Structure formats: C-alpha cells, structure tokens
Image 1 (cartoon, rainbow, N blue to C red):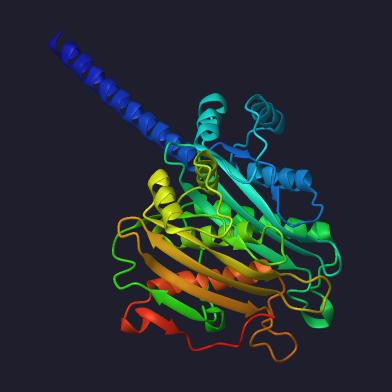
Image 2 (tube, rainbow, N blue to C red):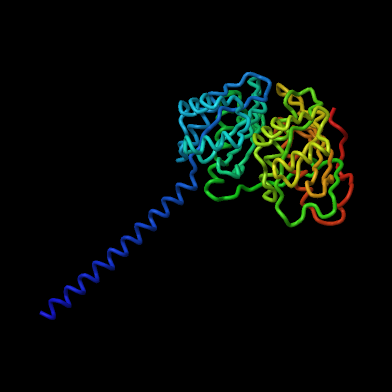
Amino acid sequence: MTLSINSMSRSFAFVFVLGFFLLSLSSQTFAAAVSLENSRPRVAVYIPQNLSGRPVPLRELREALSTSIASSGIPVLDEASLNRFMARHRIRYSGGIDRESASFLKNEEKIDAVLLTTIELYDENYPPKIGILSRLVSTAEGMEILWMESVALAGDDSPGILGLGLISDPAALRKKAVQSLVDSLKLHLSGEKAETKPVNRRYAPRYFYRADGFPGDRKYTVGVVPFLNASDRKYAGEIIVLHFLTELARDGRFTVIEPGVARQQLLNMRIIMAEGMTLLDADHITLSLGADLVFSGNVLVYEDFSGPEGAPKIDFSVVAIERMTKKMVLSSKSYNRGDDGVFFFDRGKVNTAGRLASFMVRSLVGEVAQAGKEREGFSELPYSPGPAK
C-alpha cells in the first residue's frame, strides 16, 4: 500500500512539473507574440500630399505603398475604413496629423501609427523624375516620428554601359521609389539601423555660425516651421522643412515634433509669418510646442529641371532659436548646383533638387556636431563655388 502511495505521489509530482513547464513555455510564446505584434504596428496610410505643382497619380501611389507595406506583414487599415474616418472627422489635410486626429485614429480604429507621404517632384517627361518624402508617426500621446526617409530618383541616374540602366517608364520609376521607401521602413521596424553614407564636403554650408556650447550632451526637442519662400518654386518653404525634419530625425540627437502638430498650433495662435519668424514668434512657438529649439529660414532658389540637360539649384539660409536663452544658437547659408564638382561624363551629378537638398541639409546637421574651436563662432567653410544662378 505504501509503495502504491509513493508511486502516485511521484506521478502527481511529474504531472505538476510537466504542467508548469508547458505553462511557462506557453507564457514565453505569448510574450514573444506580443513583442512581435508591437514591432509591427497597425498602420493607416494617408493619401500622399502633392507639392510637385504637377498632376500626380496619388491614389496609385497610395495603393502601391499600402500593398507593399501589407505584403511585409504590417497590418494596414483598409481604404474604405480610412475614408469613412476622414469624412466623419472632416479631415482634408493629408500633409500632417494633429493631436486630436491621432487620438481619434488610435481610439476608434485601433491604429498605432500613420504613414504620411509628400510628393516633392513628379515629371513623366524623359528621363522621368520623382521625389518622395515619407514618415511614420505614432498615434500615442507623444506623437513621436518613428521613421522618416526621402527618395529622389531620375531615370538617368545610373545609365550604365550602353544605357542599359536607363529607366524611361514613369511607372517603373514610381515602383522603384516606393520599394526603396518600404525597404527602409522594414529595416527600421526590424530594429536595424540603416547605414548613412558620408556627404561630400562640397555640400557643406558656405557660411556657418554655431553658438559656444551648442549642442550640449542633452537631447533637444525641435520644431521646424515653414521657411519663407522667396524662390520661383511653389511650396519650396514647406519642402525644405521636410528635408530638415528627415535629417534631424536621422541624426538621433533630436526629438522632432510632427509638423502637423506645429501647423495646428500656428493656426490656433493665428501666427502668420509673412516676413519670416520673429523672436516673439519663436517664443510663442517653442512654449506652445514644448520645444527646446525652433528652426526657420529663407529659401531663395529651389529649382529642378526637365529633360536630360540641366542641373538643379538650391539656395537657402536657416536660423535656430533656443527657448531658454531666447538667443540664436545656429545660423547658416547654403547654396549648391547639382553639377558642382562634376567635370567628366556627368559622373557624380545630382539630377533632382530633392537629392541635392538632402545632401545639403545632412551636411549642415553634421556641421552642428563638429567639436573644436574651429567650428565655434562664425566661419566661412573652405569650398565655395559661388551662389546658385
């Protein structure tokens, strides 16, 4: 009888341990599933904003983005539900998202993030050209910009031997641009950091001032307001802002405020910067946004070109005002052509203003990080081919 009882005890203990092990394994599997789900947020893809000044197949681009993202395993809100949501809340602006709309999306549609896309350039003439800037914005309370990327392509960027690399079909170029953006997004969501190639010194700002001690070891919250547009290119002030947001977010030392939030705050405060940003404007903007810094500036030239001959030209200046000191901590002047430093067979030529702007702004943000007295105070940087004409 004693033997039977001991045997039963051992059997019970074995079943208990086995059950505990299976329960633990199940919990780990569930935790892994939850972690995987969090790394793949449910996304709403807004119809792209068109700042190109030309007709653009916006719905085809949105569908291509949605399909490519969904095929990567990322849940996407269907178009019918998104259209009903936007009609219900009378949302017409697709270039950004404010806090109220983000809260509605999160609570009503269970959306974790919004993909906002802007078309900077679209030209179907040979060689075709396209410029797209895209960002993923969290609908959580902080509305963090989770990822941001720009892509600017021309059909003759890489002609190759006998012109085998030329792209003459605008649809093929659109597909390549969309795939480039989605590949970058997938890489970011996987936890990997994309490699950022160094920028040639010829894209450095021509004149540059940085206050002593800026930037410090702290992380800055930054707002970028529309630049004053004195160029012939419509929307150039808004386009250059998006390039600044992209490079500041890529840098890692700055928390960038969603431009849709900044836009709504400017509307609420009835601030119209017809002649550029004043110190009083900067004070109001930084306080209302909770920003440590606010960037603004002027765009004098922002030119693309159509066809195989020509070069893009960009000329802009920028200032940054700090909230606590109410002082200018950064000022610079930049101008470049796409064929600067190009002498043989168009090697190294930049064919789109979007790509040129990306290089110029990335170089400027890189100058902010330079340590040493040679970068403190006012300086004229070495390479200066003259202003864009």
